[in-house]
Length: 115
Image (tube, helix red, strand yellow):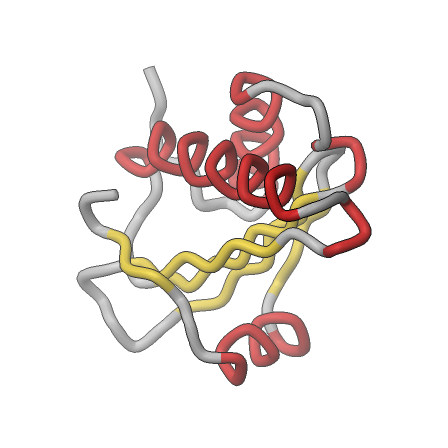
């Protein structure tokens, strides 16, 4: 993740949940808001305990991170994102999550020209 740093503070997550724009896909819900860092994006990943035990939740976060990394060159900078795994994501592959993220970013108007 070249232009992205981790979003770690609870207040940042809460700010995105309450005031950020969001789009829900089949596998991932995306919350976004502009940040004050014009040169970098910040990314937070969440997977609820209702999705399964730690191995499943960590796998989902790895898949979401990999899908985001594949789309990162086509996303502008200066945004905060929180990706929330949904129930259907359990047992899915990276390609399905990547398609879902591509749909969400297009809907939010963030995806620049993609080859």
